Image (cartoon, rainbow, N blue to C red):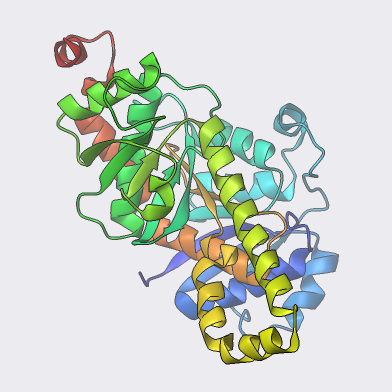
Length: 352
């Protein structure tokens, strides 16, 4: 997508410092020339960096604050006393209509609590979920929840499915995404009561998605479905396992190519293919966890990412803003939310 949007940036959240945030904004501008930014943070650190950037001249408004959320801060403490932090001010800018979305690489728990407190959840949604992209053999899939909700009800999982499908339609351009529910087997009798109840609701309800059924862990990298739904406990484990496996195989490759002079020669001959592989699985190009289900756009960047990764997160926020993801999710729940009340007559009829 291309178009104009203002994105609020937490200038102090990145582990590598504000240079990553501003350089990331430069990279995002290459894809979205119409972007503008409001950057919140310490002016003494940010102004010298901004003065050196030709690309950001005229597209950044700097708003000074000396306070920032640290990785060690408890979310409850930030909620009570962090009103003047760079993170909270960036979120408030979205709530005030000054920006279309917020991007931060700061404390995940604090970002979630503040976003939920300020934006509130969309009517019909019990809990927001963190969604992210996952590289697969077929391209990209959307995986949620990535850790916001360790324990989920069947209703929560169905809500995640609707939100994930809206996300896939908006950002990936899929008219009717396929949705899979992670389980320990594909058979209908497998799994606990929660996933079986969620599957039955997804099969019977006339929702704006195509329910594939149960999928297993090995279906995630295959790209069996466009949207992968699970609770935050399993989702976070799947994400971290994939990241660890990618690093493991990278190390194996480096060791193999260092083994002899012939293997080093092989490295030279295979350099082009290895470069393509690196670009295909580069985690920086999939950076950005989205808090779905809120009346506002929040994108959480990995704290330790570099400028390329932060630029990816900004681009994701821009795509969501220009595609009105919050409005689309709200519309879906206005239309289909009545199907998701376990105690309601329509849901009872579905499950009978």
